[in-house]
Length: 425
Ligand code: AAL
Image 1: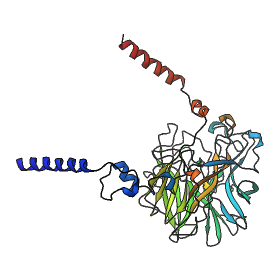
Image 2: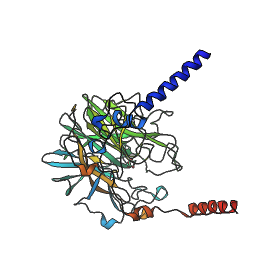
Image 3: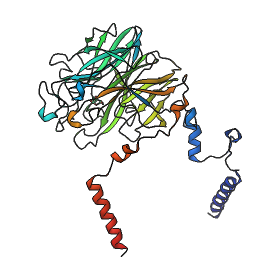
């Protein structure tokens, strides 16, 4: 026993002596000894991240936004919405994007008031439309790509939140196919339940033929993806189709205690069968997530919701994601122009722009509608824009103060102050 105690004491002394012996951390990295003992944070800087400085980190960017030209929103009265854009692709000498389009007699009225023509939520009673552009800023709306199919086909109530796949010179749109109005908070299986359907075409201009069947089925009743399969996001990797999708644990009801996570399913052909990865869920956060091939792996921009919201993540093997950077003002529900989305490249360049949506375009929940906007960033190996690698993006002071305290919070603070004052009397 005595021997063990002396051995432990000796080791502790040895470790603390060897720590003391280290010289202070050098000013220049070129003077850093490779055998130097590092704190956990410094170790992480070198081993976990692409590069220790933001400036050199290809997977860090801030984001700039530009209003799009070419879309009319009926003076923002809530009757027209455009949201959840697809990736942007370049074909026939122009850019193409698809998105959820609603044009209804009124703005969304909530589940209780919905009917055949009145939408419950912003993505109810929608169709998938598309637009083209020569420069990515001014767009020409081309009209409907995928209409709602007749009842009882999946999607008869609404088709929404699409994304595009190009596979062997054909085009595929995957989308959420609703067979009931969203927003019923009392619905046993969740308020926004829908599976994923698909339509295909020989040209991005259509005509689109619906497959009229579910392509990614729900999990069984006790499985994590039983409630919804949302935001299908197809990419090509290792000769297969990879569709990332959102689902989540727990109840999707009024208490909002559900946990949004993302899974991936792969297939050898666009109509499936899709095999869900055994490690699903593979992303633990993100309401809408946009992904793009980067080097040999895949990067994910994880937006709102979850413990790792507002991060950019990377999975070298397309399954095991690690946080590569944290950032702010991320695009919501972005669809990037991702030239390597379908090329199966082993050294994909990344992205520099895309389209995202703004869901509070009306600035008034009574006139709920969404609009599309363009984002620019530097998440590409070949682009080098140091101004997009800065983290000190200053937001207007008013924006912070707009998120003021509510009455209940003020009352709690007043009570706490009073209690402290009383205790010191
Ligand atoms: C989103 C997406 C899905 C949801 C709704 C419309 O932006 O996550 O599409 O169903 O909100």
